[in-house]
View 1: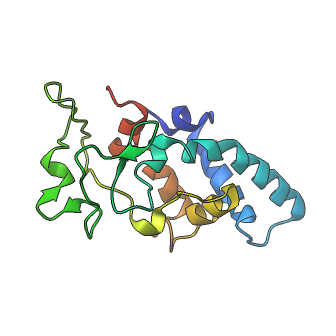
View 2 (view 1 turned 90 degrees about the vertical axis):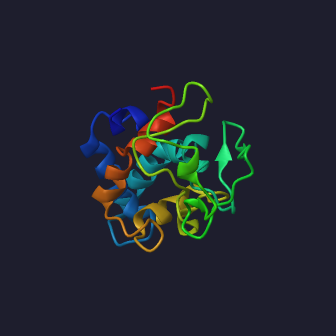
Length: 164
């Protein structure tokens, strides 16, 4: 599923422009008019980032969350030091390269893991979320383009089309 489907933008370029424009909201020097436009643009896409589909992995907890109600992972797993689960119970123990029809365990053709704690978004305002997204110290060292690329990974695409 292309990134445009995830956020309602007509193109990857428009989403990238929105994130670049969001830099203004994060306090970097741009004209006041550009800041107003950037704030409006980011407010339009912020609900996607605040969705349980994103927040379950971008949690501030020592465990993953599941479902639209964001309940604690039913298997009581732990984040682990690297975000890939505890040493004796890594995410990949259950989460394979595809959804498992017999057990119902979801999978994605990618390394299954939680976002690092520095990338946790729980409790952030829209402005704080924007600052996290554009700050390489809090977004996994990503450029604006790399943040957009993240939206096209199999793991993120799975979150929006779990049955596929």
